[in-house]
Length: 110
Image (cartoon, rainbow, N blue to C red):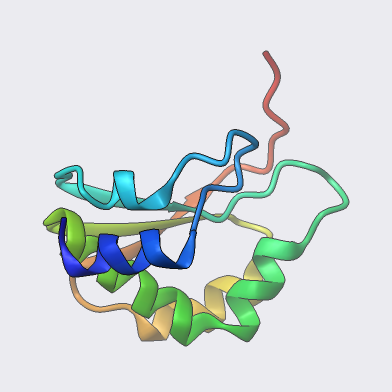
């Protein structure tokens, strides 16, 4: 287990997708691209946006560490186009192997 995955396990970090999947397991799996999903789909929620604005440096550092853990060559943070403040806060902090992907403002169904 790499150091980053070990620290995530020791801290008890789990995903917020409902199942509480252990993050350290994901950080032990090789990946070419590491994707951060910053697209909230519930119309009234703005937590991801607010966190990206307030903690932009920490978000980018976390992406850097996650990329290191899985050996990713590229990091992508996905935001909806309307998240102007989040994009503006994060964009200038990105390394050359990181980028923001702009998503349409749709509510997923199905």
